[in-house]
Image (cartoon, rainbow, N blue to C red; front, side):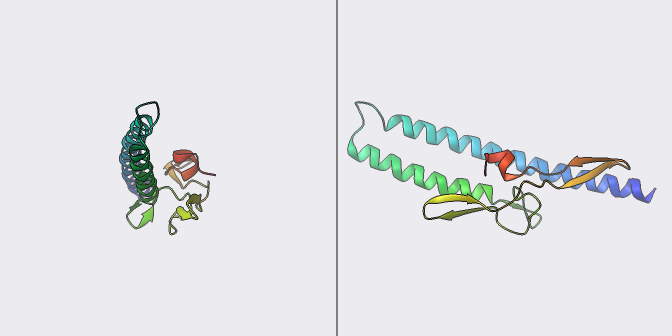
Length: 129
């Protein structure tokens, strides 16, 4: 009985983590759509040097926002860090984004004999390597 109670608690917590991850990834999707629109507006014959410069600044700001979203914490743990949940998984280094999490997902029991993945790693969510 105690084992079933613990499994139910684990599943509830895992559902919360995955729901928060889904919410963050929705924000990532919206931000990437905005970046795409910005980039498209900065190309072609109608683009001016000032509009291209403004687009570059906007894309740079969006990259910083993406890193922040990738480093979202929930219940004191980084959502996309793999099993390294105590360390921010994404860092900016010399203008490049570096993934320092790992691809080891957290697992939890959904029954006494079945393990399921309980989080989404940075490489799964963002294609990080």
